[in-house]
Length: 273
Image (cartoon, rainbow, N blue to C red; front, top):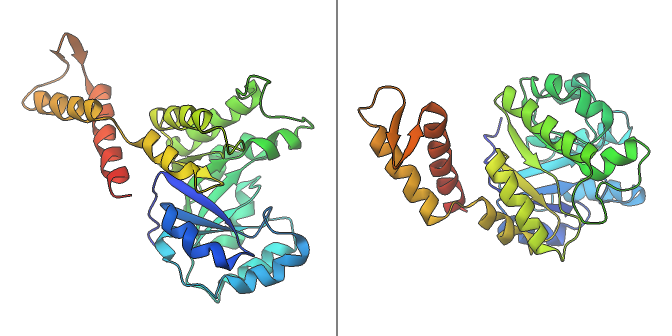
């Protein structure tokens, strides 16, 4: 396995555009070379050949594969044998058994159907699954719906439920969770709001579909100077304490100290980006 490095901003890149591979990899914390929805059926053979044409860092590269119930997956896996990439994303992961052909790879399971959300816990429990990501539009499509968002731009309740279910399933198994893409590329304020909530809720990363989204996501995951200062001071205050204690007028106990540790951990990850 490659020891994939999870940064906060993951950028999708169509696998049939090898001219964009290096730029995408340079812009983001990791690049997702997409063999699925971003590539038309007639362009998939050339896209698979392109995977081996441009050398990217395997520790910062994910290849999105076609779903388990398609003939394309076999061809995708054959193409991967000619590359150094060993971290893959399985589109439309519906059950844990979908992952059986991927035993040689670290897998980001993309949960974006009703079946996948219902089975998220068993999917996350697979040993080679390193992360779960959820997808809103395919999920709603699998339910017969037409939109994941209300006219206000907020997620509909079913999409919010799926987001929480995937985050909880990943967390219960000690795996990372990746938040869904923000389709409205021009809505950077909306992206910032969602990415800030994702970071505070426990997501490890947010997927991007345009380079302009990357700095917004990084900023959202980066703790403020005040947050970092608070985290350091409260952890220093906890030294020598036994159990809960009062600090700065507030009760500090185990969960609060874990929050502080997570703030410093995020500061370190985003600081390296």
